[in-house]
Length: 113
Length: 114
Image 1: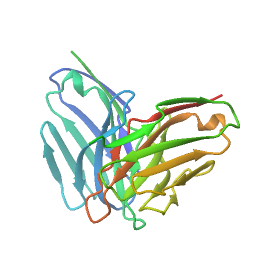
Image 2: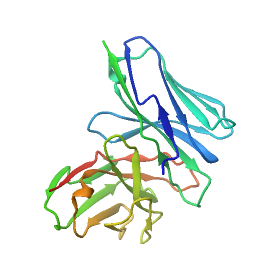
Image 3: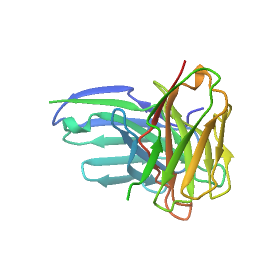
Image 4: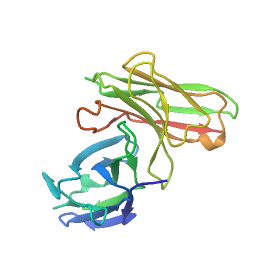
């Protein structure tokens, strides 16, 4: 069973446009993380937002978290062709005493020059 | 500092064969994980380890075994491979829960079972 569900499944935009991806989850969380995966590569951590935070920035990335709606969004501003990748949200749920993340199915982002 | 490395990168097996995937990390991380990734799905946790000598089952453990004899290594074994185990396998590691739990991933092993 997946905790996080990303929306949309695929997104195609032009360079310079903003890309917004959404993630919904089911249970209470400690934190929510976003990862990027380039084709044929492993996942790379982008940003972590804790359950008591509402917004976080890192460079061109902006993440919001709404725990009342159990949802998060990732905004990439001024996108570049190099941003083409799959993006996954992962939740660290408040179940168990270990460091386990549950990943969603991901959003495939294509940025066209 | 190589981070997380995986061996091999690619492998083709016949049904019933066995193999071991090796994961190594040089960041002195306590926690290590094995995931599989299938098309259209996110990563699913197979097994994990919270320290040397310890292992535990994840979401999809059937058909796999693991061992963590040394802190830096985490081995994933397939005793009798099945076509359903065709997938891309990722190893990851992280610090303990004392620190935030960003996970660091290896480059993956693409396994095909015929």
